[in-house]
Amino acid sequence: MRTIDFVSNKRITEQLGILIDAGHFPHALLLEGDTGLGKKTLARLLACALVCREENGPCMTCSQCRKVINGYHPDVLTYAAQGGEGSFKVETVREIINEAYISPNEARYKIFLLGEVDKMNASAQNALLKILEEPPGYVIFIMTALTKTKMLETVLSRSVVMTLEGVDVQEGAQYITEHNEGIEFAEAEKALFLSNGNIGTATEILLKGRMSELTELCADICKGILANDEYRLLRTLSPLIGDRQGTALVLDMLKNIFRDAVVDTNGSNLLSGQRESAELLRKSITKKRLTQLVFLCDELRYKTLANCNSQLLVTKICCSLRQTAGR
Image 1 (cartoon, helix red, strand yellow):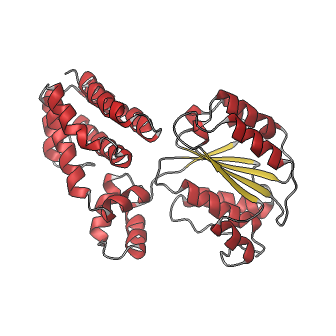
Image 2 (image 1 turned 90 degrees about the vertical axis):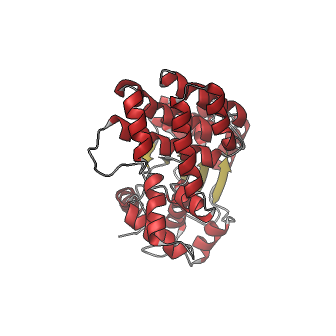
């Protein structure tokens, strides 16, 4: 069976490998999931598998695979959003449609890797829908997005949607230590645990030595929420201005602290590892509000990765945390 050598989401990669072997790969595939989970990597691996001439490819060494990996295969074309929400323009989609009606040069398929398609506005998505409804038989679209919720139902109904999840902590720690000198297994485990199995995020904070910094910042944010002092909380959050990845990780870590505060663990291990913060929150904020804070972190995280204005975003985080906590 064809094997896609991807570190996580084995069930998904096995299913896709079977579809490639059977010649039934979907003409439109949407991979959704957080930044750092490897959506772009998996999309390119799938492109290799589709053009590789080895029976059980992708072999990653033949001329076809190498061209895909190096970004110059004539039949594998990459397009992506150039900025924030709405930046994947209808003009780009029209260019894609024109390219789609030109037959492949070397491979059996003509593959379009479309990144951040959730940044298409309605006009761009409706333009894409036209080619998705009746694509040439040789055309395959492999799309990536943070979330499918920004996509039109008509587009989703003509696509196969698969959601990527975080890697198993031990498996991910093994991968990180094998690919990065100087990172200890225990450090990698902790980073993956705090980043919900997101290898990309965990690797970044380990390489930049940010674990202690962000853990301390989360504790200060919790104290700032409880202090009922808007200026203090805003000042605490200010180091996140201009740091989208750090902001997203802090929101992940806060989400785990809020979860821990909702559930009385009676001494058992916490998701966040921040017992003092969780207990302080539990004593001062109702379970209903803590649960709302958990969901708020997901909402704010999406806004963070959607390239909102960074300074306004930090102000939004400050106000939303205080309002939801009843402060």
